[in-house]
Length: 162
Length: 99
Image (cartoon, rainbow over all chains, first blue to last red; front, side, top):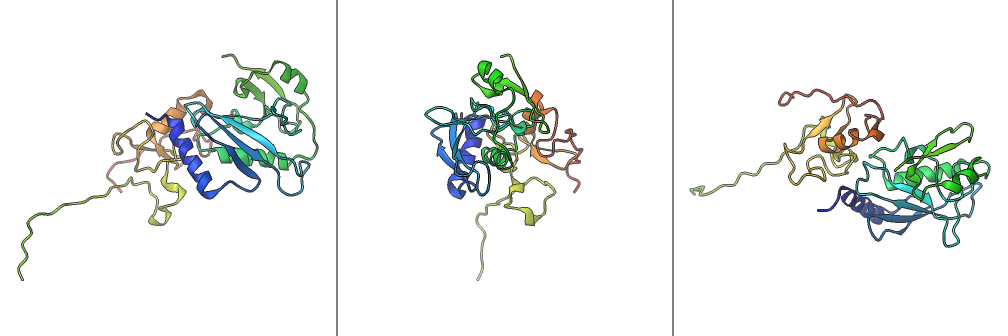
């Protein structure tokens, strides 16, 4: 029997293919219901003008009850945007990917949120604890517990145990 | 002319009484926000729609397939909050058959 995640993702994919993605977001690859790739760019005036980033989604069989693992692709010459919430290994500190995930959200909703997170950035800089985090970061960003602090760009991250 | 009815077939249609008015039909409001399957369909874990795969209403007025909502509420990540408004989930009492 098809898993919960594949039925829901098939629906989302059909919608993307029939209605298209929001401006600045496009589907790059969705060959299965385990990993999808999107390109994302900020439209209009921003510190990321003309820059295109690749966003990777990984889903487990419990999606959307379980949140997707979302990160920027940093292989094959691709880089993560320089942003106070984005680590150089592509991991993203965003509340909706962690403790504010809700199963009524969707892949496109996540893309749009991350796009506006980039759009509202005034100054390109890495998180203050970037080097420390990247050195020991788990492969899957879902195993990191980020402490959200939108005011001060002062992130702490701890690693969850398996 | 005299017509004699030899055979007839009754056809019935049902839908959950979600409190939505006719105008709201065909909008996003007709699907469970969690699985995106229409309320009258069943959740992804069930094979047959109907009483075995009922809806659940929250005090916040949001409606889901009961099985979908319970799966979410059963996770620690849900913090027992409604997926729509993140308010504490309280199941609304509904009297069946009195509308």
